[in-house]
Image 1 (cartoon, rainbow, N blue to C red):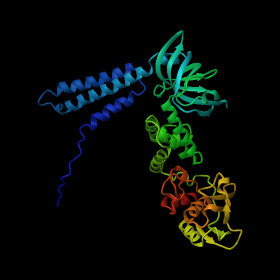
Image 2: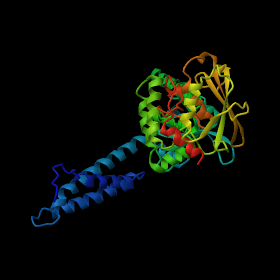
Image 3: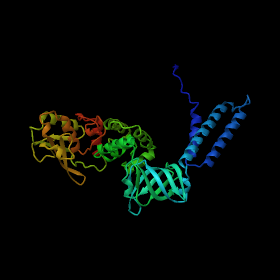
Image 4: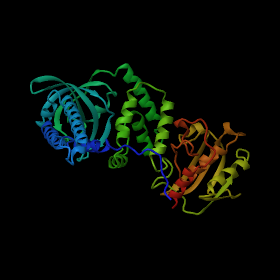
Length: 436
């Protein structure tokens, strides 16, 4: 018995021409106008031949006339756009001066954040992206709009984002497929001739606030979050950058973040919450939870002692322990030398590692956790502290903060007002991965 489906079939007639046009565009990436002209001519000849042959009623290629013409039009449009874009980028002869490694004086708008690196000879250097507006070289001054990679010393890190500076240096070529036209090695001082505009200053306050908000987050989200929101990739770890390059995901920070940063100044809190949700979806591993090399216990069962029963409700303690027991056995004991000790009130503001009125301090030897003490702020005495204790127990097990909103390890400064009192599947998975 056959079942007839009335669902419409997808129309794929435009897929073939689009794939061919994009394949030609990919093959000519970084090529000059001459090679692009050859590619356009070749496609035009093939399309013309198909059109001529397809005029015969009995010809088998008649059905290919339409797609062939469409391919030709798409190739011409894409190649024309590429040539036009290249002409604008190289306006002013920057590409030629770079090929000759010419010494120049350039007026540059700083479009990127400083990235400290170490050269092959061990010297500290700073990389920074910029757009050359005015260039003087070989006795001639010209206007341009060429993106360049600035290479210099610590003085290159001082000017603020979107400042206009004047620098002296030597141009050098980059890979033809690089987004930037040339490298400019800076020698001498960096002189600021125009500070950032009002819009840029507002955006910079957002950027600075965002970086400060994630300063204590783990390395990956600390670098990825500003990139997703505002295109700031200066703190992205090298291994994460390589992984994004390998998987073709660099557009998430190079395009999305850069566009958002130019839309004006928005509330830092809303931007953080939205970006945290993006990271939770896009990054497979539980960020900030368990990472390779994190300290861990070397025993299968942990003992827990309540040193101050007035500060810690027995009901809260048992409820919190029960949430972690599916992945790690923990038992209450009267022994004061227990693995985890719940202390009396502490001044949470005195410790930089404190979390909303509580702090977990672990004692380690190498990569092994030897003990953990949790202190509760006096301001929380008498309140429901179940969520706080569950969060701190996660730290005692070796977990860091998470950017996954529902997680009990969620870092509240990223946009939440209260800790989730419930351990999620992500939290349990993080512990399992740490102790597998």
